[in-house]
Amino acid sequence: MTTETLVPVEDALTRYDPVMGLEIHIELNTATKMFCGCPTEFGAEPNTQVCPVCLALPGALPVVNAKAIESAIRIGLALNCEIAEWCRFARKNYFYPDMPKNFQTSQYDEPIAFDGHVDVEVDGESYRIEIERAHMEEDTGKSLHVGGSTGRIHGADFSLVDYNRAGIPLIEIVTRTIEVPGDKAAAVARAYVSYVRDLIGGLGVSDVRMDQGSLRADVNLSLKPRGSATLGTRSETKNVNSFRSVERAVRYEISRHAGILDAGGSVLQETRHFHEDTGTTSSGREKSDADDYRYFPEPDLAPVSPSREWVEELRATLPEPPAVRRTRLQAEWGFSDLEMRDTIGAGALQLVSDTIEAGATPQAARKWWLGEMARRANEQGAELDSLGITPLQVAEIQALIDAGRINDKLARSVFDGVIAGEGTPEEVIVGRQLEVVSDDGALGDAVDRAIAGDPDAAQKIRDGKQAAAGALIGAVMKEMRGQADAGRVRELILEKLT
Ligand SMILES: [Zn+2]
Image 1 (tube, rainbow, N blue to C red):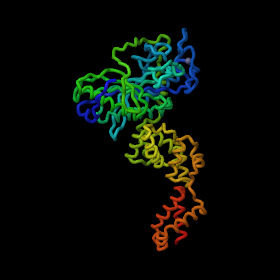
Image 2: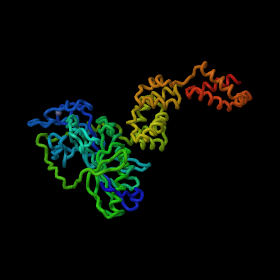
Image 3: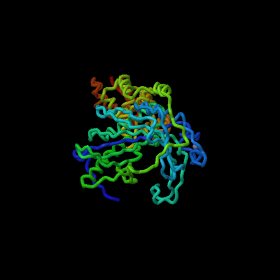
Image 4: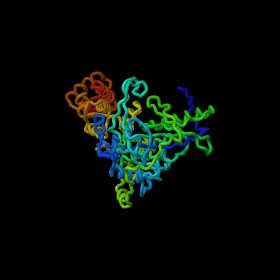
């Protein structure tokens, strides 16, 4: 293992400009696979969702899944792409044990969608990302390495292959080179992946879950000396699986490339793996532009030529564009520009929207997701949507606060319980005995004890200084471990002393 000299990003950016390219793989949520009728459900017993076509048995013939073509066209349109009038599948030839055909059916020089763009916002500035192409292909199977301590192939006793995933339809979205001010590069990369997630999630054609692999991002990065027109050699960091990691991978690669270039070395063109725990990348496989996949048109599949009428019909099914939707939601919710920007920046737009849909007020929804939930996500290095709590549950907990059953402080404990799998918010309240006490009998006794324990404060209230009630309320809350209805406690104190 070579030791790498890392240059602090801010320092590197005084001498180099980063050039990025992003590739996003989207797993479509069609009921069946790309070229056969096998189901695509996640989590089935290994090798139970296979047939002669996706196992590539001799003589089996593939047929294109029309629903996958429809989803691909809708994705292309949402990305402002042109839709090909005629395109073909191609064989990408390489050997990999979890790819039974020894080639991947993909698209090469004839993608279904091309020449698009999206605009993403970072710190109030808009950046245009050009889309080179969005093409269709199929997923591979999955290898499981058994034995050894790392779960990787090195050191394993043997390997097993599961072909359930082989043939699941994928869309690969490839950007043109992205050149933005260096200090914005990492944030723009993150904003782009987040934007594509929202865009495609809105189409309903994929689950777009990065933590489950239905959206995967590859980050290509190179550096060129400031002001130079010559591109440097790029590295490809594969399968980065969270927005935060996309940002970290860009920053790490800027530091690493700068270290190599400063020392007069040359960057190796290779794929790299990103490590969530350390925020670093490590070498994968060397790669050159001359990699020869011997692409040729797939002879077993008819070309795809969507009629212009069909394309226009599909265009009419597109939901509101994200920028328009954001403006509309901001007005509906009454958010300030800053509140809206923070919500989008945190990747919480859909979560906040779903929470409001489930009955919470906009400000309550924003408060929980950007406060309590963002803090938890940060501590765990996780994304908001993989915390184990849903917008519906957040809205339910807020409703319990509004009904006076719990207060904000107890709500945090309810969140703990729901995330720990103790059941619904209601079940957690019962299980953990979290309900606030508003029963006058129990509260009255505690108020009497607080008055007896602090005669000075009691006298001040009798003298008309109601502000002194705070000390007595505090004493009652302490005795009741925060589970008293503070408003009712205050009323009881004033009733007894005035
Ligand atoms: Zn099959």
